[in-house]
Amino acid sequence: MNQEFKIPSHIAIVMDGNGRWARAKNRPRFMGHKKGVEAVREIVKTCFELNVECLSLFAFSSENWKRPEEEIKHLMGLFMLALDREAKALAKNNVQLKVVGDLSSFSEKLQAKIKQVEELTAQSTGLKLIVAANYGGRWDITQATQKLALKIESGEIKPDSISEEDITKSVTTAGIPDPDLFIRTGGEKRISNFLIWQMAYAELYFTDILWPDFNAEHLKTAIQDYSSRQRRFGKTSEQVMAAEGK
Image (cartoon, rainbow, N blue to C red; front, side):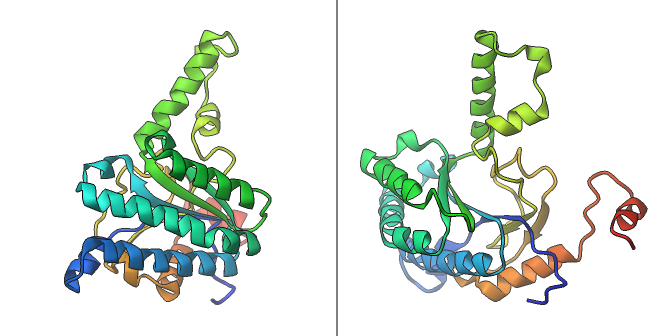
């Protein structure tokens, strides 16, 4: 990619379209999810090569439990398999894995595997790979406020002293920069309860490409689009240009 393009520090992606990809090819839905894992591998590799600091992927939302039992069974098995197969490669390539969400609903075996891979990659200093599983943005804000409520109850803080920074430090992505670029594949144009506190100023990019077909070139196209935008954060265009020396 041309070096004049601005590379986002943090890219967040809703990987939509696995089921429709499978249906279009007259295959069972789980084949779409399986193909989607291959797309994840390519996008992780590309982000690493582009020196993206953090990549967040919405793997399984708290609303996805409403899906057919058989599909959920396949998704859990695929998650376990992907963790098992990719763990050493992540560590070898200096990628740090962090899984966020209410993991208590997963099997003990899957929880143990998640913990194992997180510990294996904990010392990695390259790309941070955030996988949101059994995650919801409203749940994240709720658990953050519960943490703060306990601090109020213990007398550690006062209600009127709570700031936005305190909430940011209490959500599951504490210590990680907010997403700069949000990508959703599959043609839908909504955030779907993903990192809603963190994405207050993210640039939104929607594409009709189904996730299993989303590749490195599609990612670079999204980054180029992001790079063409002026991020003002409440300032005027003139102020931003002056700060950039233009």
